[in-house]
Length: 160
Image (cartoon, rainbow, N blue to C red; front, side, top):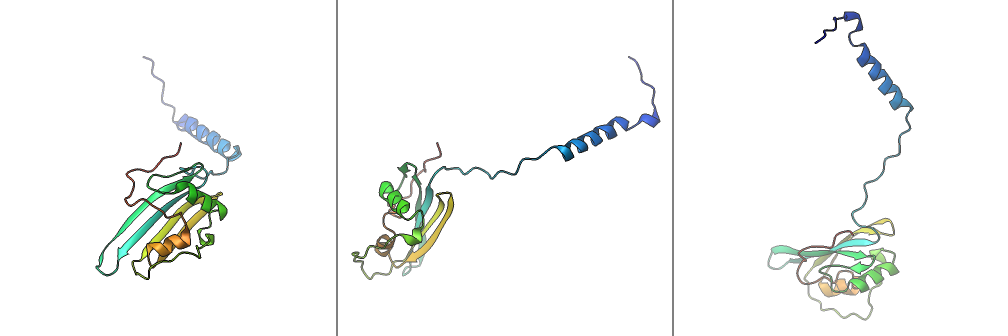
């Protein structure tokens, strides 16, 4: 084994040179712009949910929801995914613009439900929340978008 004599004058020189070289490279290397994290779902999709509260009994609210994918239309726990996607396509994902059914006749029963939707449509963020006096009024105002199955699905479809 050969020993290299200690030279205090050279101590730290290779480290300083490496640091200066690295700094110079970092300053002269062009950087790429930051990329947004990819969305888990491609195309048009909306997570829709309905929360019902029993105002008279004070029971806790019950909620059910599902992921509605529209390229192609599919959803676990949604009774009318194809129709809901077609209605959303007609208004370009703007749930406020969904046409109300003028021929709907709903009972004057107070059983409030809150409809919520969040997702992406045509590259734009979709967010919607509205409380209705009952499910009939909600369906008359929002069409098939919130036509969920009676029980929440065990799993939602994932991106492919």
